[in-house]
Length: 182
View (cartoon, rainbow, N blue to C red):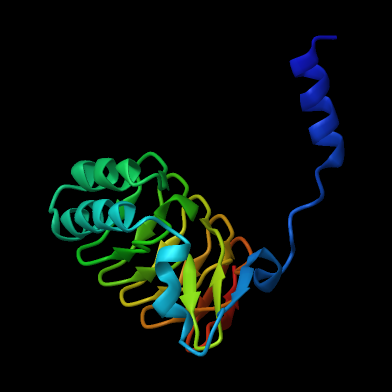
């Protein structure tokens, strides 16, 4: 067995199952002083990276072409599946777009927000967002970091997604709750 194969085998045997709750997927970093945690954003990501992400995300935000939009978002490091449709004015996290995954044939509705960070007064939270295949997300939905949305789920307009959404379910509201199991 080659060294690389042995290392991969050792690594895979040490892997733990994925966290089952949003909170467990978040990296929580206390603010180092009396300032709110947003004052320390530059500790998490290089300022030039944020400028680059901002330019690409805002160009994608107002691009009428879905193909161009997907390409611009991929340049930020975001994982964007085939045939994903990102509506007009959708905002993806400018600090950590590489932590956002949207699988194939998903629709994200007008003016929605997908965040991979939360900057609170005394701490900052950073975590991945995973949106499965064939998901429908209505207009003006906010998705918080650490959330997993299962394949075929539907989120109604004007919702706050602060917890995982199982596959095939219909959720909505602030905070989002199950409206219907399909």
